[in-house]
Length: 380
Image 1: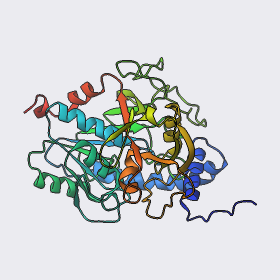
Image 2 (image 1 turned 180 degrees about the vertical axis):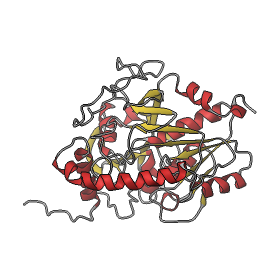
Image 3 (image 1 turned 90 degrees about the vertical axis):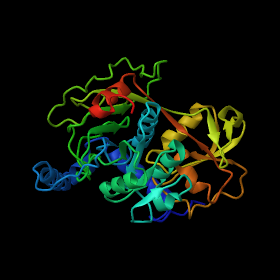
Image 4 (image 1 turned 30 degrees about the horizontal axis):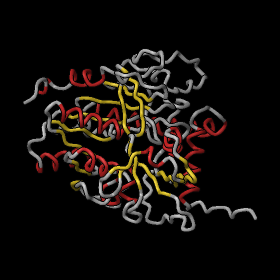
């Protein structure tokens, strides 16, 4: 008997709808052209807002300490949070005292609040919760990033640099460095929302570009793609959709660009913090769940580690897991992303979380250090 169709409100339906939109954004097909007029309206409104701040009619505010924004220009997830964590850890290793500010996307609250290592992800957002738990750094969330910055600096006055998780389009926050992150889909079909994935036209002024590559990494961390890190995509005919960027070259920009490789850690983490090696899980049937923008990437990386995925469940990005029901008739070991763990452990404390690691091409952190304001040119 055929399975009953799932209602539009079901998590799996939403995940499939999201995947369908992502596929439509990769080419300039009938749906993209049908939505193109709306994308022009969206672009006009976005351009007006940018102009209001650049002209000085609206004034951006600076936090008073060097501010680094790590964000993207595409909707649907570019993998910026792992880059934020890599930047934070680099700054800590260099002797700085960073703090992280964020909107806290997907949280049920609307106030300005500090994020503690044990803060519920539902109240602060899953990405800020992951950063606070993994990086041992002050984190504050607020709808207005400047409110978060003021609160963080008041609570931690020794903070000497801020990293903003997302916020390239948050013009009220003045910043010193903009880092734009791309996944391996690049700019997709090159159209603005809703006809394409772009939140604003590309290229736009940024200081550094980080782009994902599917190529294996060389020992120094650079992607072995045969393409120089600052190579640019070829020019496009006026009506042609941009060629998909599968790690071969970054989307065209005058900013220095650095390849990034994502890979899973060699271990999974239990709720109590203890680890289990991934190779010890190879003989176990696993139920893999992922509530991220591109869940199939996580499943593929698990399979690349020779793990047996008896079942997979792709859920909407930032899904809270409160309504998720684990199959009760199977004895599968539950495995998830590190981002989903804090939400999943509330109901399924036996779940295993696999951290995601990133390797950025040699030279990125030197370029970042060179662009920090002069007062951070040497450790305090």
